Image 1 (tube, helix red, strand yellow):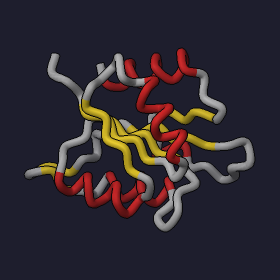
Image 2 (cartoon, one colour):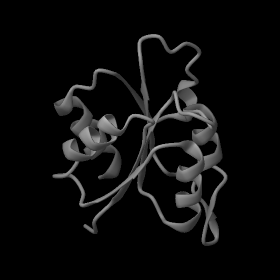
Image 3 (cartoon, helix red, strand yellow):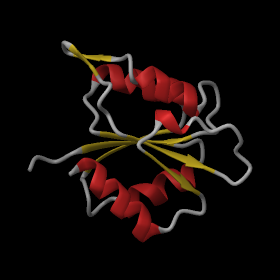
Length: 122
């Protein structure tokens, strides 16, 4: 199986690096972005196999980013099939679960997080 590329988008640098460390055994191709705009630019240039998105991003929030991901062209196909995991806090309201294959509330349990990611990229 080829190495999968995982995009993690979170405004918090500590969370970005923590999630990246959690997934180091799952993939060596982990991309970290701090906002939705940079994530969209990355997605236009590079094929992604899984996106992990904090719902509370500056600028384009996690819901808007997830909607946008579905309409980005990768070669001749739209990336509608990219699995997306939403990361949210207990204060989040009105989560549109239909945009995500899975959602995880912070604080994130490492074992559960890794299992969910592994299931989605297998």
